[in-house]
Structure formats: structure tokens, C-alpha cells
Length: 121
Image (cartoon, rainbow, N blue to C red; front, top):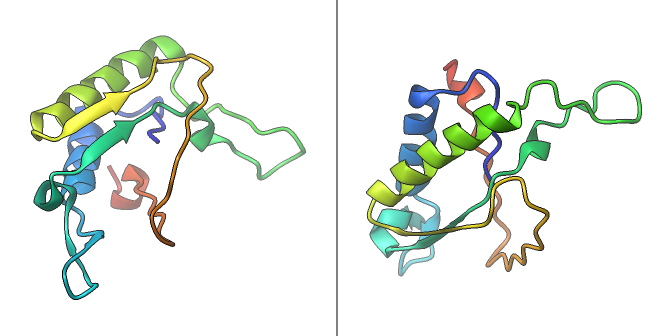
């Protein structure tokens, strides 16, 4: 799932794509996280999800002011998809801004969040 912030641009895309495809999060033959998506020739499902930017710190209704507006987010998301595809991995996606039913089968107890804000980008 990819959330696009209003301030996201090329350097954010470069970081997220590079980190995603290179992060060693797949087990090797000894059960250690030593393999990346590139090492395993993984297939990627990349879905735009503005609700990742839900701000729930106040009140009872989430705010989405940090999320990019749809016209900006669509262009940024397409640029990210292009970069993911340049990695050589198979990339699947849904339709931007569509109501979709996405079925996920997590294989193991691992969910990792990447955020460009953590890098000060």
C-alpha cells in the first residue's frame, strides 16, 4: 500500500522504490531475513491508499490534510509504478481512486512500514 503526501516528489519515489525492492525481508534457507524482492524475483502488488495518511490524533473523525489531492497523487503514484516496473519485477496494481476489494494473504507475522519522513526527505 502506498500513501502519497502533498509534498512527495521524485526523491521520495526513488527512496521508497529502492528501499522496497532492496529491503531484505524474505527468508533464506536458514530462516534469516537475507533476501530482497529482487533476490527472490518477487511479484509486487502496489495499491494507492490515501487513508494511510489518516490523522487520528484529535476528535473521532480522521483527517486527511497530509494526503495529496487526487490529481497530484495520481501523477505521483503513476511515477512510482513506473519506477517499480523499472526494477524488473512484475508489478500489479488496481485502479487509482477506485473502490476495490483487495484480498491479502500475509505469509508470516511481518508487516513493515516505510516512510520518507523518517529519512527527513
